[in-house]
Length: 134
Image (cartoon, rainbow, N blue to C red; front, side, top):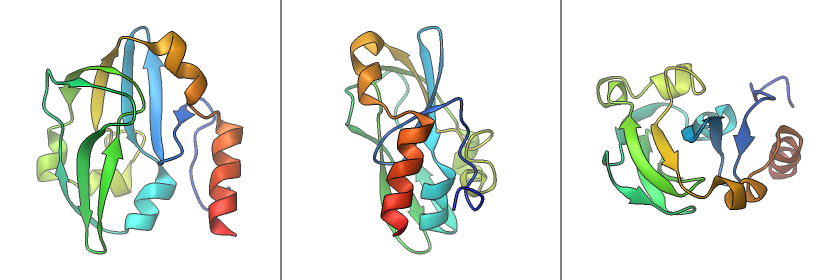
């Protein structure tokens, strides 16, 4: 199973299939390879608004695919400081490169110390998707 999906070991994850990369007080977020595979061909992304304040667990974006529509939930609280505007023209980047060019937003975190323990490690995330597949 783990060979089918690319799940980087150095990121943090949510149980709603978002990934988080933390550098200082900035978190870059996107959806996992597993999530993009479930959605199939992504055709549209509604990005969050730069400057907006978000709370952990709040819906911040919407992804439309030929199959369905899925919400993207903020894994952390803070302020949206950057969005990946390239996705407006090329939403398929989420399918092609979910951890690279397919990132969705960057958040200046304001409560990482407390919220970190609510995120999943690589091992915990792998257990989650293995349970979903069974």
